[in-house]
Length: 194
Image (cartoon, rainbow, N blue to C red):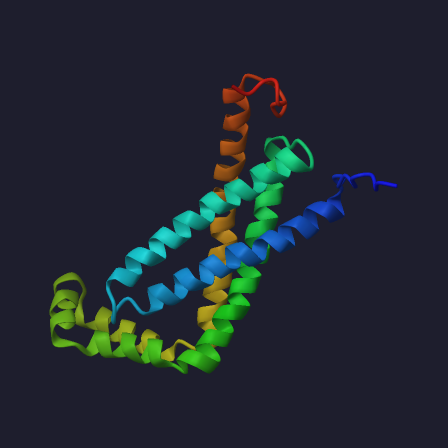
């Protein structure tokens, strides 16, 4: 006796589960991108790799939402937005945790120390003096010396939350645009595609 193929049905819990699974992949890309960005002062090409990975993560997010639309349920603009937003929020939380582990146990303050050292560099200070007053430069030094791990993590999480909105809007728009190009009102069927 053959088993019938189990078809996954769309439900709010299914969307949350799918978002959670996808978030680990996106978060992994964000963490690698972030670590590359932290080490840009040693290896300048890492900053380029960081940008490429972040852009690739947005493309992967689009692919994940599109896959959900193709294999599980047709989604409208708003549903695509909410699914991609959930993925971004979950990925932000996972990457925030990974960033904490990196900064607390692996980096051990080297990044902040390097930034303080850069701000004390004579060539950097000449550039800063051309743009800011002496008082503003001293305030920046005090701020850099006073940054804690908690400050950095709250900034990372807040940035992930803020960026998740335009990224999710972009993904929802692209999935809607794909529907329009296929010539159908809903998600295209196999007969509609060329």
